[in-house]
Length: 141
Image (spheres, rainbow, N blue to C red):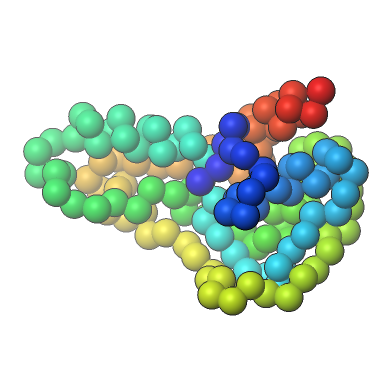
């Protein structure tokens, strides 16, 4: 999950705010591993939408767990390039050894959320990153 107000500092900071911070400071983003690992990056607004849909769902939808995500796989190298486009800074990433225990690929199955809640991801990665950009730029001023 990503969106405005994610803290880029600290040992558990997510990759998106870290990439924003690095690029806005004129530094290359750091990628752990070869950059081909992938994630299903989900804009916070989509999670809010899913919660609203769940709140209004029929009673038979209760008691189940639902995957809420974009339903699209993005490799970390592509993420770094896309954030570079959003902020207007092209920097080649620095590659570090992979971190132990990192998952190589993740992609959510949204079929149950679609079927029972009517959930569809509303934002592309580019749209969500563009909406998030202002927060990180404002933090730099």
